[in-house]
Image (cartoon, rainbow, N blue to C red; front, side):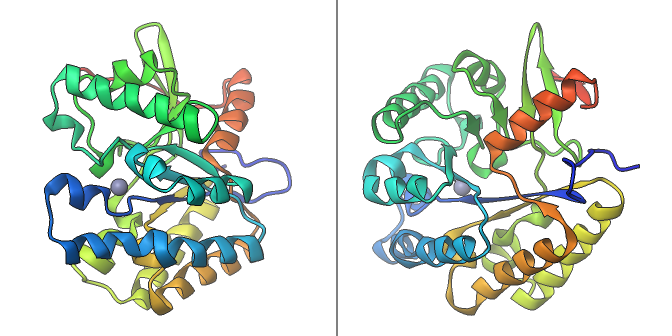
Length: 272
Ligand SMILES: [Zn+2]
């Protein structure tokens, strides 16, 4: 018996998502033009390669996107949405929320809601904190601004209901081992082939044990050159093994149905 029951007809849930940071993190840090250009690769080239591959496999996913990027590249955002994908929130300029005071952090949420309404056509339903770091105010802001799900915490292996006082949202936990950035960009400790093997091992584990695995990628990283083949091999494996690949909002709908039968794990938010 797996921890998360997949929808009928599927063997497990594979939450593939992309963080479309473009050059936002580098601008926030005040980097040089060359470093900025590394981030910009995603919007010039990387994301288009991903979109074509996702279309080939008829898969629709979620792009967690800083609202500065939404504002700066509206045509690209419209294209992503028109191809059936979801745009969810990821800070304004890829700030470290744990370094902001309440007022500055609330501004990030306010600006993000406004920009999304303007360009995407609606407020975001999902959120992922930049660097997977919350502040102690983040939970309250997520609930105040009406987020339905978040994907930033690391305290379980399957999605769960995160309760805080009398309110709740769905949490889709993440894991640094299931992110392309540390291995291919930051530490450069694995080759793309080794990373693929590590991820396939995790997927095989999920198929038989948890029923769920979440893999995070960055268009500026996985979209570069032959690395895109890692994604293609993942999608081939997913198709062969009966994976359900949902957008974040589809997963929230599914969890809502499961929770009617009390089939979703519940964790209380731990204040510190
Ligand atoms: Zn990011």
